[in-house]
Amino acid sequence: MVRQALRPLEAITDNLARRDPYDLTAIPVDGLPRELQVMLGALNRFMGRLEGQVDSMRTLISDTAHQLRTPVAAIRIQAEVAVAEPEGAVRGRALDRLLTRTRSLATLLDQLLSRALVIHRSDSAPRVAVDLRDVALEIMEREDHAVLAPGASLKLEIGEEPVVVRADPFSLGEATHNLLINALTHGVPPVSIGAERRGAEAILWVRDSGPGPEEAVIARMGERHNRTARSGESSSGIGLSIVQSVAAAFGGTMEITRDAQGFRIALVLPAEKDPS
Image (cartoon, rainbow, N blue to C red; front, side, top):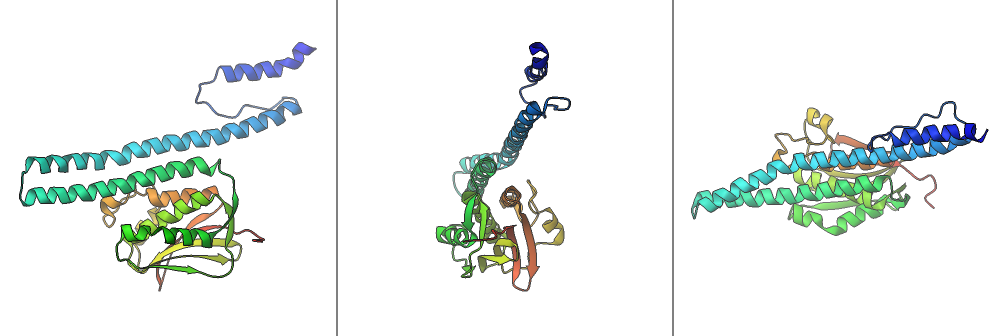
């Protein structure tokens, strides 16, 4: 009798022992006692979350390799040109291009690290009540715009009513930071950042004063490796893919709109029903 009761456990043990280390597919529960189904259901949910994290890390590694090859190769070429030309206009142009590419590479590395942190935290960081007005204010006070676009005007537009969501403050900050980088790099000043409540939705947005890109470009926004003739080498699609990842992690979306005031990209999340 005891031997017969242990057979389901032995089958599960054999299933796990024969698996590839990367095989995180669910363990079948059909025909098992109810107690085992409850236990395996919890284990399967855990493996599902773990598989999501592993897939995200694989994607990140692939992205990093893909994104770094071109700028590193270009930096090497421009450095070789500068070394080969002791003086003159050719050396000056090579040094200018070298400086531009190293700045672009620094931004790319910052975005790759940001994406890695967001991926890690999206499934592990506790959700807390966050007022999106505080996120907008904190990004404004960083004064990143003074470094990214010296002299560019940045305005803060928030009201007196709380705009509260339940999420990870760090991830929200990273998403907003990338929205700001996108607007300052590709948009038309002045740029505005704000938060507002729209029914059951809480919105954190960044808007520039330009018309925005063409519809075909808008349709591809948020895709990784998305470069256009307009963005050139300064865009890899990682920034807005971070925004989309954060939105999805907390049950929201990335919203893109164009009106008389300019071009706006927003993080739209479910609002807390009772901010108090």
